[in-house]
Amino acid sequence: MTESGIYPSTALKLASNDESPIRVVYVMGAGRSGSTVLDTILNNHEDVIGVGELVHLFIEGSAQKENCSCGEARDTCEIWHSVREHWSELTGISSITEHERLMTKFTRVQRLAIPEWHRLRPGNSDPDFAECLRQTQATYQAIADATGKRVIIESSKNPLRAKLLCLTPGLDVRMVHMVRDVRGVVWSRMKPFAKSKEGGVPGDMKPKPIHLATGYWMFMNFLSEQVRRAFPDQPSTRIHYENFVTSPDQTLTEIGKTAGLDYSRVAQRLAAGDAMAPGHLYAGNRVRTAGPITLRSDMEWMKRLTPGQQRLTWLLAGHQLRQYGYHRRPSDSNTGNVNDPQPAESIVNAA
Image 1 (cartoon, one colour):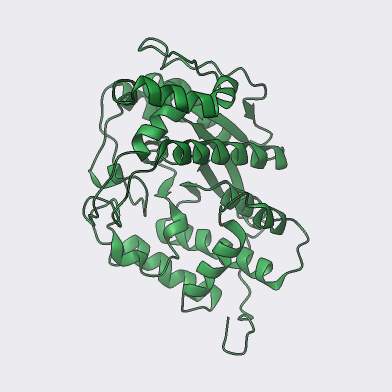
Image 2: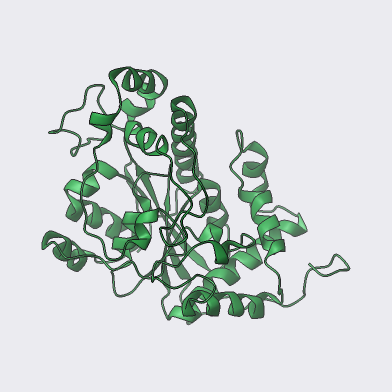
C-alpha cells in the first residue's frame, strides 16, 4: 500500500490459456505431525519444489533468523533472494510488512478463527481481500519463475491458508491432511528447545502443557476437515503419520493420486534406504537443517508419556482419535497400521 493508502495498480499476469495453473500440494494439520519430513520426501520428485512453511516468508526479519534447508542463510540463499526480488517486481511493493498484515487479517488461527473463516469467501468486496489474493498469487508465480517448477509442495499446515489458496486465481490446489496420534504431538510439544539458527530453531521454545497441546491438535485437525468439506471439487486426501513411516509406498501412492504425480521412484528409493535431499525448505521443523534424511518411525511418546498423561490426553481427545482410527491402548504392532473408519478418505476430482 502506498502512502496515499492506495494499492499499486500493477496487475499481476495470470496464467495464459496455453500455460497451466501453478499446482500447489498443500500439507495441513497440527504441527509436529511429520509434515516437514513429508515435505522433504515429496521434494525429491524431479518435477516439484518443496518450500516448507512458506507462511513465514513474509514475516518481518524472518530471513535473518534461520537458514534455508540448503545450508545457506535464508537472506542469501539464491532461490529465496530471487523469489523476494521477483515478488516485489510482480506486485510493485518493496516492503513485506503489508503482506504480513494481510496474512494476519485473513489466515491467523486464533481462538475459533470465526472472523477469518468468514472473510475468506468468494465475492468478498473488501479491497484488502483482493489485494491479498493478488500478492499470494505473486508469491507462487515468483517461486515457479525462480525454480522452473510449476508444482510446489508447501507444508505451512495452517488450514485457513489452504482456504485462501483455494480462492487464489492461477493456482491448482491439492490438499493433504496429515494426522498423527495426538499423544505423539503432545510429547513433542512438551519438549523445550533452545534458539539455534543453524539448528533451525528461530527462538527459545518453551514446553506446552498437555491440555493446550491437545486442544491445539483437536482444533487444527477439525479446521482441516472443514476446509476439505468447503472445497469438495479440490483434490484432497487424509493420511496418517504412523502409516507413512511404516508403509511409505502406500502413502506416497495415495498422495500421488491426489497430486497428479507418480511417486513410485521416490518410494523405491525410500525402500532402498536412500537419504532424501532437503532442497530449499524455507521454514519448518528443525529436522530440515540436519541434511539428507532417512525415514524412520518416532514412537518415543509410548515410553516417555506417563500412564496418567496418556489417560488425560485420551480423555480430552479420545472421541476424535477414535474417528481417525486410533486406539486407547496402542501397541508397537498396531501404531503403524491405522485404519481410518471415516468415509471419503480421498477426494480426487481432477487429473
